[in-house]
Image (cartoon, rainbow, N blue to C red):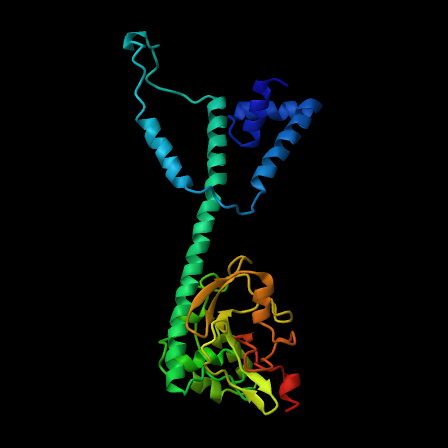
Length: 328
């Protein structure tokens, strides 16, 4: 095939041909094996480009160098060696040829492939920063709470209507340290609906609930986060008390799988924001580290087994599974 025929095939696959040209290509595809074979080869090449949905880091200073190149190009002087009279006459109305359209489509496609990862990365960073801002507010409220309750953070009991990790958040609101539950929803969560304010239960409603209503309220209390629960020792279950530990997590994204305790995918598997006991918020990476926050030292999705065994439990789950709670 010659270049003109290949251009027609590319234009046909990009839906950039006039009706007569498109009909010509369809007729050739029906009659010629060579045309069908070349069309399949080009189509596979285009599919490989469009199917690459993985995100890549853009080159450093991409926007800066692009703007600089455009500015320098615009300032280039026109050649002085060619007199104006010698320039070829041009028509006042210009028309695009098929080749021009194909080249323009290729340039637009290449620019989209280059800029899309940068835009996605910017949105991703914005979600991380918004999530960190939420956790900083929770951290400040938690520090204030412990000052009023002799160094203890919000208590999560093991029995009764309040035996759910999300009661950590409800206590902060119930005692007036936070105005509402909005900060307990991660901006990177797929369940977030920014258009509607969720209906959150109050402590009074939780205490008064019976039967299936208790379980329904448990699903709403903790938002999308997981919370630090206490630990078990020989004397029973203990609440979390301040120890000024730099690496003791208090709140982070809830696990996406209740059976394995794996961290959520709110931040595309590369990490998550974590609020620590000191009030600091850090973006933590590493699958093994993240999974360890949701399991105790015995690899159980349950409360810790000693004072420094920090475990984050999803907001809608009890601090101790029923198999443990019923044995005490």
